Image (cartoon, rainbow, N blue to C red; front, side, top):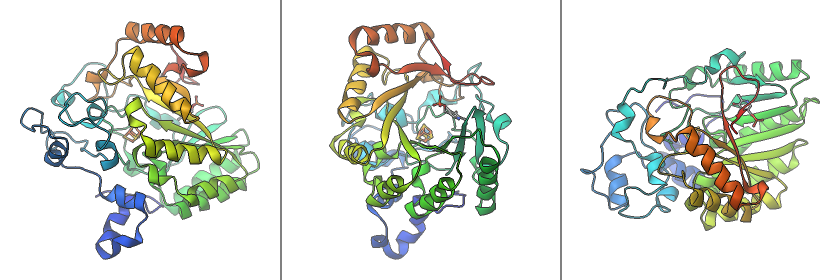
Amino acid sequence: MVIIGLFQSGLESREACRYDRSMLAPWQQSLANTVTDFQQLCALLALNPVELFPADQAIDFPLRVPRELIARMKKGDASDPLLLQVLPQAQELNVVPGYSTNPLNEKVFNPVPGLLHKYHGRVLLTLAASCAVNCRYCFRRHFPYEDNVPGMQGWEKALDYIRADNTISEVIFSGGEPLVVKDTQLKQLVDKLDAIPHVKRLRIHTRLPVMIPSRVTESLLTLLRESRLSVAIVLHANHANEIDDAVKAALEKMHANHLSLLNQSVLLKNVNNNVEALSALSEVLFTSHVVPYYLHVLDPVQGAAHFNVPREQALLLMDEMRNRLPGYLVPRLVCETPGARSKTLID
Ligand SMILES: *Cc1c(COP(=O)(O)O)cnc(C)c1O
Ligand code: SF4
């Protein structure tokens, strides 16, 4: 297990479980209990592993899926839209021209380890290397986190970088998955950011409240509420079926604590590339106070080409959504252009 970083992640607690599992918070137990075995996933979903591709040995990006997400999948359905997001497939091994291992060339914007400064006024900190879930389309699936989640001194360097540049008004916790970091350690970092006068906003890019809703603990809510910074949580859900009652309850708590809630999705073939799926997602999110923010077109990362939706179809879907939904429920269709000063709007 390769987990590096200043912060003890929930995953590291996997070691601790051997001694006293009851010491772990429920979300940490869930992280320690994610399914990483293909046969086990098939058994839980009543799927025939022989008909699927047992790719875990052949593909360098392992299977990883929380049991909470598996519980929302339809048994016996190999084309379930939640399953397809996490299921290793033979197509991942195809080498497709134009798809690379580092599609965004982010190293260029990486002045100190763990910090990306790409856009004006905002820096992104890669707080943790791991995720609760391995999304097959992830553009960071080949990202060298090992070199980019620094130790204690490294974070001081990132903080010094932020302190020294008073154009930085927003700090984004990202990853990997920033919320695998424990609350006590998040609090230490937030306290340090609170003390930098030009930082006004904290943003957290996280998929964990959707994957493992028990992550929304009282201590997390308290530390965010007590911060001087305005806090936005940018969630990541791609399909309405991801939002079950437990997720709704977690979102309700965040809303009650005055956190601004946004969502970003990725447009994925066979998962959400139809107007019904996209509209249902926007609508269910809004009932939980979440506003759709971005709909990303797939980054051309090697191993994910089978998720690609042609540009013309994406534009058509946006038109259909605009015809059906209030403007505030239509996310912005964007892509990342290496070298651009913002996300690129596609219209
Ligand atoms: C997407 C992104 C941001 C945030 O961009 P917004 O358009 O403000 O959501 C910031 N930094 C990096 C490196 C990003 O990739
Ligand atoms: S949660 Fe985000 S960073 Fe983690 S694997 Fe999924 S898309 Fe990638």
